[in-house]
Length: 400
Ligand code: FES
Ligand SMILES: [Fe+2]
Image 1: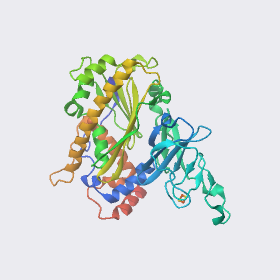
Image 2: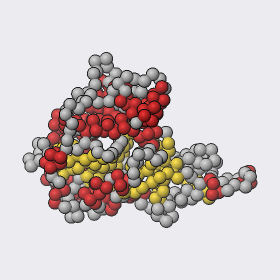
Image 3: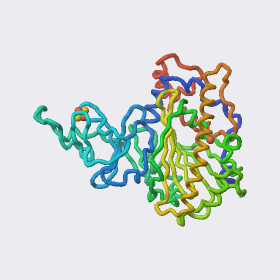
């Protein structure tokens, strides 16, 4: 379907509420607790790519909203996810963010686990009554691999399997052979002093591109279009404008961009973005695939994180193009960080009356609608007093 056809099919309601979520929702510590549980624990989270842990014993650890996750490849080459939590007294069983091991040895008292999470043995076993090892393996976390990306979920939520959820993107993403790609660099992360929703609000609309992202504007021009979130997913289309580009990186990127032979022509001159509710995006270019996401650390601190992957066989031109696209992306990230800071700050001001969103920012609204569906207290214009929010939110869920 062409962008024109998609645009024609989209029905944005008339007189929609353009004000966005109430400002209190960006600073309320009790709400954050609900978000951690209902959004970040109960929805699929993309942790890494299978090529980040390609050998037996390779692992990645990552914390999601106060829960500690360990992803490790076992002796059968299968990828498993566990809580990074020793069954003896709860220590992290692995402290490094990434690495490789033959067995998982807890640094506290030395209990040893196999790569499949089963307990191999405890230190000084005679100091315990007879211990049923089967009952003391690492606790498993639900894990699904889709197109080479490793997703985990800490509790059953409203989403179906990743495969079902992302099925509408499957055909297009299959052209990139993502499962065969390899890391272009380490998984990156950085902190930003804003609420996580301010990050997502900025990323969910392209209305700001023309003004705030000179490089992207130079790359796409008008050929940029956001579809709203529907059933937990959204897509942003962007194809290169015909002009050569005034910006040095863009001009040269357009010159060097060389798609891998398996990528069909209609995707040769485009960067597309595939959104996954509540907090992740998979972005594809002719030379690379990347994911990026955000996780709340507190109401006003967010972890930004992502990974970039390249084709296994990469020629010189593709490598140069990837370097240039990274330059463009890095500028864009810095520009977005500043926009999120201003947006987030404003919500503490007496002068802030809420957003007044353009039709081109309907993606923000559709993301908020998804949030309201999972956490109905977000509909309240008034900030609930103290921890009454938990009861009020529950009541609203039950009355739906
Ligand atoms: S907490 Fe792991 S061995 Fe004691
Ligand atoms: Fe942006």
